[in-house]
Length: 337
Image (tube, rainbow, N blue to C red; front, side, top):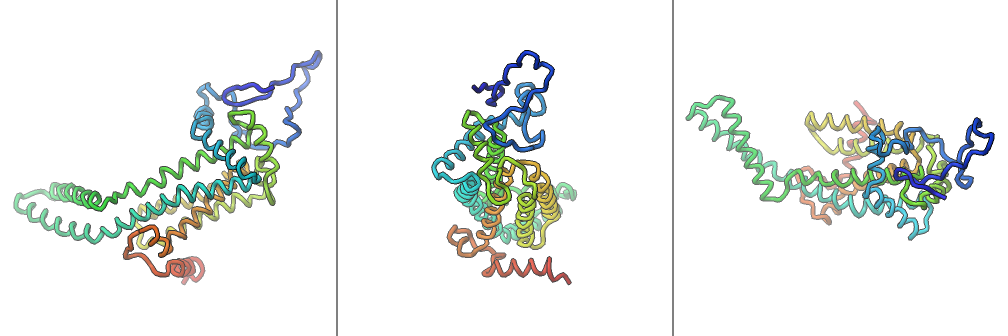
């Protein structure tokens, strides 16, 4: 018999027998399945639900419609394919990244390529506008501040008109982040719900039991932590590779881009201890997602694939991108002179 409390299905405690009031209760058993020794913070407290406590915001996310929909997708893929859960997680990740984020990443490169091709025209406009403002400032005796503000205001207007003309406003290139990050959050929370049994139906208990035996290699229990740290370290290494490929691709980065690169490097390293304290099912998803991100990054450097996606040629494009990438990597990390 199951009862529902705060969005969780719980088994009621057995009634205390006479004379057993002073004895500690034995841990509840779920069909003899071994439970993982997860950290306290990894399993949100039921008492926090609806109490306005620190865990209430996470419980609201964990029981939200997008997370529930993600759970249904995972269950549907598992039922349709009959694959073990480790393969199901990998297949779902590849399918979502291939069907959703790859087209968005190609669109992002399409927008950025058009913006890059506008730079010579923008520089030409800036040069002529600067001359016109200088002449007008001399005629009307403007101060340097007024002349500068006039230049910036007109420059923003003219550049905006160019973006509208070519339909390539840089903000459109951020659509990948607005889709990919929430999808990453929903998948992670859905797998956390499966791994801790905090789902919306009684089927959640069977999912947790299946995850406990549907791992592979050194992580047979997907509800447990990876005590070897192989998965967490792999996640950090792959993310660092993605950052370094981006850094090697950019020549003459601005100070802001340099700061962002260092920040993402730090986040990639900090993800290692974080990944070591959550169920292996989530870390496996993170690793598959990062590997797909790395593959997409390399694929989008291919001239043939860029041509297939109708990404405009730019001055910075190379006919041998992989050879150039290897040469830059070798020069930066191996043959330092």
